Length: 320
Ligand code: ACO
Image (tube, rainbow, N blue to C red; front, top):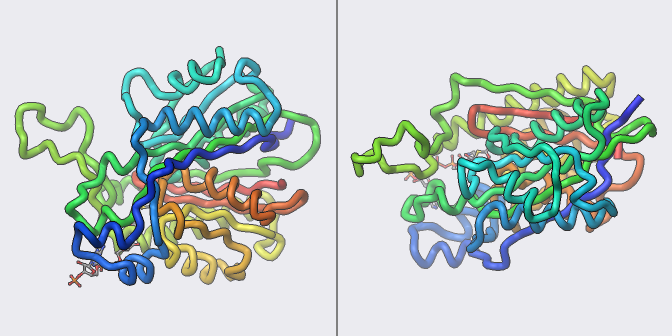
């Protein structure tokens, strides 16, 4: 019997930061508004492409796992902001880390990383793959209209990666649940794609649009629902969960989620103050930060959940 264990992790966060006060110098907002409504204090803005951040995170994850890129048999890169649509940017990362395996991108927005980890764990458990690199990487600053305060304050850039390896020790990824609610696909969207009319400047608005309050409600419902399902599937009681790593979209969403699920807030990891919402990258970055702060220790049962455009949602249970 093969199990899928996390053996390496790494992140790459651009050095340039924009604080809330920086934003207030060119848009009608305040540090106080942003902090109270979202929990965000600053975010990082990248001057390099998504694949470059992804490659750095990947190299750190490989080093932590103690393996070479050439040993990987699959790369899954979750992103909604690839530097190119063709080719996929997993292939760019692959070239940068010297891998010679299968590689593809997935777009499940903020849930993309958990979608990737779930799929990779199934491939490992079915003995299809042995060493898989999963990356969440975003440069959402590119899709922001910096004159629209409703969206510009929410997001940041960054990348995180993990290595998932097969071994026979029980544990690792215990189970996962994925879902998509197509009814809500217009409440969080960017029009970038072939539906844009290349000859009509009016339709060239590819910036992110959000119905924030609707996203807020559905995010809590989606994550709570799938978390309950994955716990049931894995015969695990909520009280046996030691640590929760939720998608970092808004600290108030996390507060409401844990309170609805009757999980003490201290069990939930929150680092949104430093990064904003980095979409598919929030969870692997959170894993790196939680490990470096000693919040994750061997033997813990960890629940992770996410929600994003689509409207996708995902929940995953693992034994560290
Ligand atoms: N600074 C100051 N004022 C602002 C700003 C800003 N940056 N943005 C909006 N406002 C104003 C509005 O114009 C409005 O003013 P009005 O009352 O005069 O009309 C007022 O603040 C309240 O606006 P709301 O949109 O009602 O504010 P709300 O409390 O809903 O907070 C927010 C908005 C933070 C976006 C919230 O809805 C939210 O967190 N939603 C979910 C998160 C989200 O959408 N994340 C995006 C990615 S999705 C994901 O990752 C799952």
